[in-house]
Length: 182
Image (cartoon, rainbow, N blue to C red; front, side, top):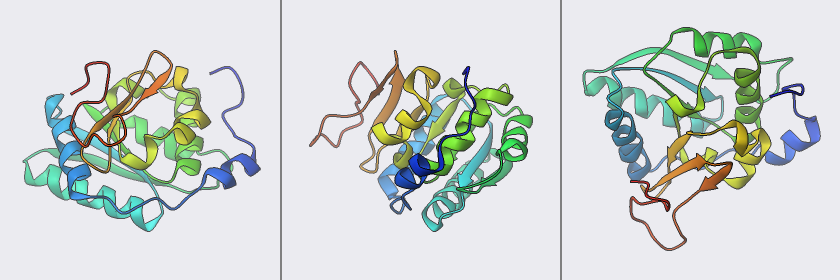
């Protein structure tokens, strides 16, 4: 990332959105994605909306019920001076996998700061459905998010590959998400 990580305020406000409540199918798929990567430790980051907080809390319970370890849970605001403190803390624990939830606006700001200032890797990150949208990915730039993967609300999988967001076709609730994703 070569430009400032901070997005213009008007653009962020238009993308903010509160996000939908996490579904059981989405939560199941998130756990499957994490376990499928043989992750033992995770760091979870989320925006401060009620939906993002609930999604993160539900994932923590599922993860710890599997005998796995949550190294840290980091929250970030929708608006901040730079998100540097939150980004540094999120990346510091060096987990096997990072997990992200939140409204697109604050998530994009946080993610841009992560790319700018930390060793965070999108390819070692899974995210909830609210972040697997053209709007959310577009705020950061798909070219910057290669390998980011997540669950859809219906239990499918989305991913960013080759500078594109790849999502299941409309009307297909299955696990596949185009281009050979499972």
